[in-house]
Image (cartoon, rainbow, N blue to C red):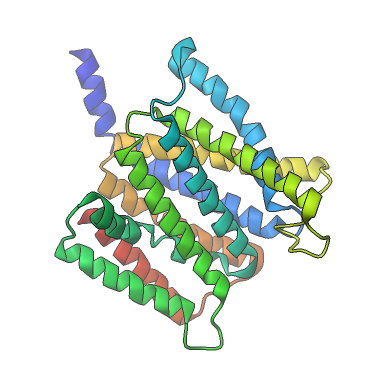
Length: 304
């Protein structure tokens, strides 16, 4: 009896769910702002490897506490690996855009992901789209146009990268639900961090062997020398990604997904604040209106 009650209380703990998701997107948005801020000092593969090297031992400790000695390889090993690689590609696309875009613009373009989840679920899983879903698709598309300004001289090709990130994330989340639903979240998180290390390490080896020194400093440069400040930044990035993987799970376990997903959009608001605070980035009125449309579209997609 008490066990059932505990489950019910956890399922209805709305303040915990809201607090967890808001704190999660606060940490993730701050981590992304730090990556944008330090993109001239690090190479993306160095971030992938060192951040996950810090995160993996912490994950293993948590897994030991939560799962004991009985945890095992993923049941759907191939799909888990594919999901992890999709997410790595998602982060590559998003991080490569950050040095070239306002943080708020990148965040808003990325948060079209509920729209892509709606569309891809209809295409690949057969989920029907309601009238609200189609309204969300239209509003999201209009918001993207307002932000990208494709017919003006302000168009930035890098703004397409967060959209590609949203598509990759949408496919990964559909795979999570359809192919990896039996996997424990900690196992999926560990698999993702191992993928970060392997992809980052492999890219580093290839760059050292074949790339010239004149390449993009965030993509093709050698690793930066690590001092106290650099390790401090890497520790903050590892903390952000760890909070992101655990906090989202806590939020969605303790509140309805439609409600938690709505507060997930606080990321866009935090991105605007970090953009002003760190980079003096103030979006123009057209971009702000486009961001508002994308947030409304995302909320409609979640609630359809």
